[in-house]
Amino acid sequence: MKSVIALYDKVDKAQAAARALLTGGFSQSSIKLYVAAQDERNQALLAKTDYKIRLAGEGAKGLTHLYHMLMQLGVPEEEALLYCKEIETGRGNAFVAVHGQGEEVPRITETLNGFGPTVANNLVSHWRLPRIVYFPFSLQNTPLEDGALADRELRLMEESLARMIVPRVKISHLVFEEPIEEFSFIAPRLTPTYLRTILSPYLEALDDLQQLIDQMQGVEVASIRLLSITENSSVNVTVEGAIQVLQWLTETLLPWRAENMDKGKYQDPRALGRGEIELAFALVTHLAPWLSKAEKKNYVVRVIPALHVLLTSELSIRVEG
Image: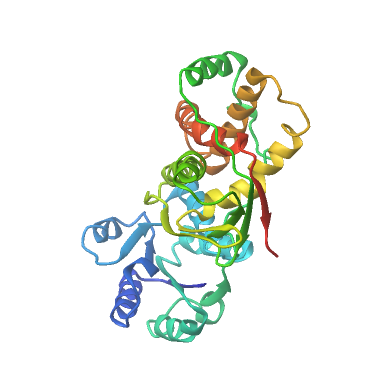
C-alpha cells in the first residue's frame, strides 16, 4: 500500500479532488479530506459530505495531532513538519490523503494534480507505507516532569486496579509477516478450547488497547476486524485495524518486559502493578500530551487490563525483515 497526499490552498479544490477520486472508483474508506479547523465554513463541511472529512486541528494541540497522523500515514518527519507549517500559516487550507496499491499511484497523483495543489512539485508525492506504521515511543525519553504520578496517586490507582479482574493468557510464538497485520504463532492444534482460553483473550486485549489509542488521539474508533485464522505448520491470523497497537507492542511493551520482568525486577506482584501503571501513564502522556492529569489517569486505569494481558503472556514476537 502507498499513501498519496496533496495540499490545497482552498477547500473547494480539495473537495473536487476527493469527489473525482470517489467517482473514479476509489472507496470511501481510502479517501480522507483534512481541513483547517480555524475556518467556520470548514466546520460546516463535516455534516454534508459522502467521504470522510477530518479537522486538521488548531493551535498546539491540533498541530500535534496532525503531525502524529501524518507520521502514521508514512510521511517522512521533515515532510510532516512542512505540512503542519502550511496549515498553521494558512497557506494550505486542506489536503487529501488517499491509500492505494502501487499500480494505482500514477492515476491518484494525476487526479490530485488536476485540481491545482499548492506547490505541486514539492507537496504532491507518495511514500511507501512502513510495514507497521507508528510514531516512535520510548518510556525512557518521554517527558513526565510536571505530569508524573505521585506516590499517593499510584497507591490510589493500585487500589482501584486491584478490584478489577484481569485475565492471564499464554501465547507461545508470534511472527509478523506481510501484509502488515498478518501474523502467525507456533501453537498446539487449533481447538475450540485453545481459541477460547488462549487466542481470544489476547485478540480482545489488542482490540481494547487499539480502541483506547483511537479515543486518546481523537480519531474514529473502530474494532479490530478479524479477517482469517488458518492452520498450517503454525496458526496464522490476519486482522485489520490493529497497526498502532501491534507496533507499540513490538517496539515498546516487549522490550520493556525483556528489560524488566525477564530480569526479575518485577517478581513482586505489587511492584509489577506499579510498573504497569508507570508504563501505561507514559504511553498515555506520549499519545495525548494535551490531556489534563485527571484525564490521563482515567485512561491509565482503562489501559491497564489490556496492557496486563499483553505484558504477562509468554508471547515472543519477531518482526520479519
